[in-house]
Image (cartoon, rainbow, N blue to C red; front, side, top):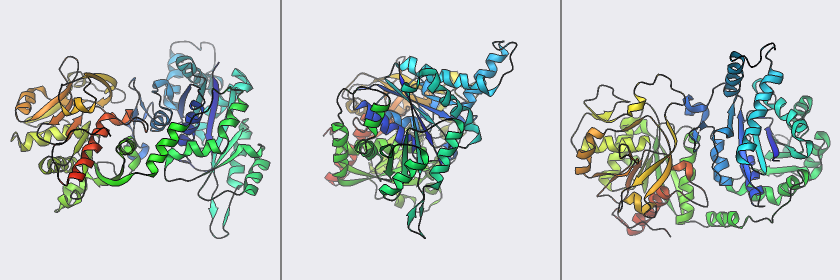
Length: 547
């Protein structure tokens, strides 16, 4: 039977539960255990797919095509697992399922209630993860903060789980925050005490408290928390704010979290090995000169909108022994600035990430034009590839009206258009081309070399639009190579400019499959060329350096 670890948060939102969950998973995996993870989100949306990035941040896509919370990206990167749609549960999904069952007559004669009908559905989703993954440990993060009205059914469900699967198979971790009062120069434990009081009123007694703080936590503070929250002193673990989130697994392991979890869940370790993780941290601490990369996007005001892109660049920097520094550039600013080229003059590479809608598109096209003409390495992701095609069609093919039918439905040259099966869909949520699809690489292309001369790759998608095949031959003749195609040859998955050191666009999202110990090949190749052109003092074609 799988063991369950339930992680809740208190005092404030964004306290770091996702990193705590991911780090705990890494610690357990280092002991030879198999781990799976689930995120419970109390909002009423079925999924975050139609939510604004400014409200939710990045939408992370699983291999089976589920649009999920960005925390799943942390889980996958830290634990090095591939999760599925069972790993993200929302109130919208739960209530939709329960109401559908009622309409089918499954509750005939009974009154539908939050307890037991809603809580039973939540518990079923938790057990589904255990059944599907067959993991030794399932870590479940409850989104939001203890005390939120919408989170109460989820807290009641995790309370019931201790009785359902046995107390030796359940562990509760509460992540809280210790505010610092500058006037008195002290940390305050009262908010943590009240947060735990809320949990205990529901019937949940935390086994471990992770106390987040921006300042060192003295032993007397730990003792006070232990006394008033009824946990053993070793089970109060301070977690100081760090600049590098990849340090957290080592910090928690050295604080004894791994041993506490193993002991309380009666798990048996198969040794403990964080050597690879420590080696990654060692390389990150000793990176050579910086590489400056511009991310030109629509949502740069909230950097979490592109969190997987940022992390994938860091991973490539680790492999290439370079400190990748990101310049966040608003695409709208590039549209409006007279001296817009100045914003890009000092960068060694340009990334245009995904997005939807027409805002900022002309600024992105300017960035792509600059990269092409100045031979600056360019990586386009989803929308970024479409931007690259539009720019090429306008300024190389001479199609001045070239555009996407998403931005200009009346364009006389829609080089980017709806995929045929997307054209007549009315529903927005969950209807895009989502999840893993195979892609056949063109031998000898930059993309093929980046992937180690492989023939077929599998990547994650999230889009409705594609390169319009009406213009494909003309683009090829002009020097824009479709270097990755769907198995039937109908869809362009990767495009690249032939006479350029590295100008590559992918219709898929490679950032979702990057890991700190295994950077994605396209990001690795991009940073390799960016650092090589720096070293040579100019922008020109170079072989991909895997060093």
